Length: 604
Image (tube, helix red, strand yellow):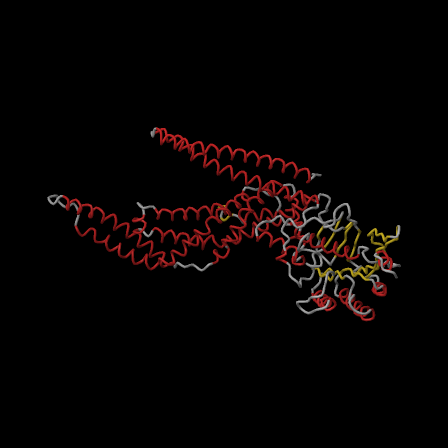
């Protein structure tokens, strides 16, 4: 089994050494540039001659070399950052240093806030190494909607994650390139550009081709006549070689071209400016696509994604390169010698039509290319999580009735040296576990561990367990609810609204209810909680409900064998309340509330 900490450290040392070496070379080249510059000045002042070419050529060559060194050094520094972040995740010092996905959080999601999916120190921050907005959004969607997949789709993701687990070079290169691409692609809004309505009509394109062809013919006919007239003007005795009327078509076509170009000028300018603004982003996207195109995969999902990056055997990067060549042709219109011919032959207009034709044919695929890269980034995030947690198990995901059957299930956000795992099985005949226990004994953590491992499993990631068998299902939780000042709602009202939403989720469903209806009196709590839990079980859902009210434990007895009681214990040691966080069968027989109050100095 590979040691991720050692591997990251070795790679980090190599990247830092490379960056240091390149910085030293940059300094040497900078000194060389200064020397060559002053050498050129010295030759020019003391004895100007052809020898000045040597320092000038050296100066230009050193400028090119310096730019390349800067690019390589930045690449090495970005690769070092990739390894540093990996080490932070392995060491458990990653909280607040990555992308926490807070922008994906919604207040009324059925479990995201309860299971710490987003935010500082969240599941998402631990998982995400994606740098593009699309990649981050894809990973967030997989975590937020576990019930939207089937077992076959999850197994395809798992195969892809297993194949990518040890491909650190690919993750590193993708991280480095996407870090450069992300801002450019987002700012360019390539997806919006690809969907824009065409400003140039097909009829106008045909007219442009016809007018250009006629202009070429008129030019071929008229230019010799104009030259002949110029010769005759300088030499009146010379015999005319061409008819004086031969230049008339050229004059007519100049007028026609001018009128047509004037009519098209505004729309052509919009097409040209739009593509020129996006050309740098397209170049960066092509570089990222070429990295993916060079890869060979065996997992079916990766093969399918790789195939989306080409059309009729033409790679996406090559298609973008064809557009970039068209953009390069636009530069010819700025050449002072070619400019008159560019105007006569509608150069800019015809290139604009070619660009629009590319956009209509291949532009729609830009959205698919970005979406494909996004899914690959999400899979790379899950594979990084798998690589950095070699002891985590890849779960068995099966179709069928709701099921969560795991051995040594723990919470992945708790460090290894403090994590306590428990065996949990819900499904089949057993639909409900009523969890009782004293304060801080581990009840809420158990609910979160089960919920987090479920969404990880259905996203395609390994889970914090020795073994897990699970089915695709939705998740609904009521764990971390608070008063809402903005909505004028108490905690109890927020809780019953959340439970209402959970009750509306169609099965298969995993429900996780912490201290059910804890904000009301014991009489109403017993009646209401019993009705809620019975309703969920009768609809085929599975889940857990924690309680301090031991009277609620009777619900399990009433629903047996579809329900069972489990509990967490504590004991007093040297005047302190101690917990082992081990789940045991049956109902808890004691409470630690008074001991906890005494421990903090309250006399009871």
